[in-house]
Length: 217
Image (tube, rainbow, N blue to C red; front, side):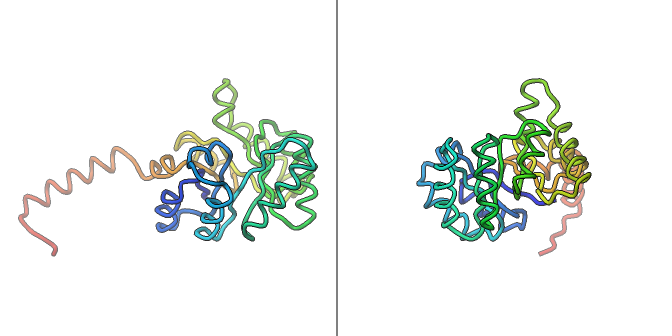
């Protein structure tokens, strides 16, 4: 499974990248706002740092305007994945950009039928939003499983990018189901290393080591 980090914070990306944990990055208008930086500038900096796909999202709602914005974003670097919403205009834009050989991440997916349309339109990635479905008492993981089954049934190349991940359990379940990629905030990725028994065991080892009076260096 590939790990994308969901942020426009360059320093947070750099820290995880240095550990070898980052296969790509996803951004959106909300994350750009949070960064407080110019979208073209910060996206270029991220692309220079991370060789894998970097999703940059269009903000237009009209297909022609989306296409113009998408082409502009794609000029930033060769590893840009243009992010478009799962609307009819977004699907049209996806088809055109995909035919031009550009990577496209179709976002805000909430149903298996939407994911099927995105694959037919040539999407590189489909981004089903797990957490937002959980928020309205629907099972986000069930959507990941449905998409996995459909894509496998017909041999679609579109990669399932599990998004809106809120917990470490979302990561585990996405991996069990067979999502190709997860994207999560830096804090969630760091929590993957946490376990109370690890902490408890380390505490006991260190206490015993102190009693020996020894030093390794």
